[in-house]
Every structure is written in C-alpha cells, then in structure tokens.
Image (tube, rainbow, N blue to C red; front, side, top):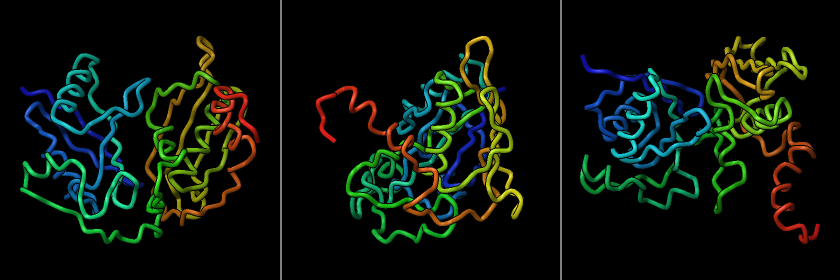
Length: 254
C-alpha cells in the first residue's frame, strides 16, 4: 500500500487538505490549489512548507517536493503545513508574466497572467498591499504556523511575533489568558461571529522556551479591511524592526 501524507494548504484565511503520494508532481499540486482556491492562477503564487525550526522551506520544483516527502518519511510525519503566498500585486510578480514559467510551460505551453488583480480589500487576508520593494513585514505571516513551534525568547518573543503575525495577516486578537507562564488568545470576532481562531502557548519548564500547544489557525469570521494604522504598532514593535540594524552598524544616526 502506497504511503501518503496529508498536505494542509492555507491561502488567505482558508485551508484545504488533500493527500500527496509518491506519484504526485508539483503540477498536480498547483492544479489542485487553483481548482480549490478561488482567484489563484498558475504561476501567480508560491508555496512554502513549515518544519520544526524551519518555518519557510521552498516548495517550487519536483526536487523540492521529493525532498519534502523524504524528510516527512524519515521523521514519521503524517501531515505537513503548506502556505500559499499570492504573488500577483507583489514585488515578486512582474507585469503580465508569471514566475514558475517552467512548470506552467510543462502543463499548458506558454502562459501569462492578467495584470488586472481582483480587489483584495474585502475580507481577512485579502488586503495585501502592493509595494515597489520588499517590506519588512513580508515574512510576518510565517511567524505563527504549527503546534510544537518554539520561541527561545520566551513569552516576550511569542508576544512580539504574535502581534506581527496579526498585523500582516490582517486581524485583531484578544487575550483570554496572559501571564509569564501561559498565553491564550482568540480572534476579536469570537463573541460577535463565533470565530474559531485560537492559539494557546505556555512555558516549557525543561527548556525555558515558549511552546505552542494548541493552534486553530483558520478564521471563520468575515474579518476586516487591512488598515495602515494599528494599535499594536507601538514603540516596542518599531524598535524590534531596527535593533539588529543598529547593533550591526552602531554608527548610524537617528
């Protein structure tokens, strides 16, 4: 009997699951995603999968897919989290032509994407703003990704990354419980719309790091329009963006 793994693919605020076998190819996966997720077009998105200590692994070619399957088999993992990142309207998408041209060419010959992008300012996660250059926040949506994820910096690191994650994805959260040993957060729309998004993390006494023990990373609410201002963007958040740069170049002026 052939061994399969379950791929849990998340795009915007929605997640689908399907099996990936040894016979599956990248073209098969890309076609499945385009069929299941409305608005996705071949070549206009990229995939990243997460592993413990490696939250953003490349998944772009059949070689990447083979490596992922090999690692999961060796680790005896039955499932994998895959993040679908839309490139249309971002700095990684240029004009009418798509990346991953080799994959598209194998499937349907020479192909292109329309330069007209659907309005993404409607629901949660559909608010990615276009930018002429990479933003510091581009990787924030990978900061909270799986049960067992560790934060060596303790509760402070967890708080900071949770806020950055919420800012980039485009939602607000509330603390149901919050102290130095454990943190429980829920979507701010839980009471009004019954949103099921929730994360529970606590301190591991053996290592001192913070660990995610429970994570429902799918929003069932309508969400909100992404805004350029947020109460979570405070001085502590801003300082975290430049502290490494200042340490590397202490001669920088204000």
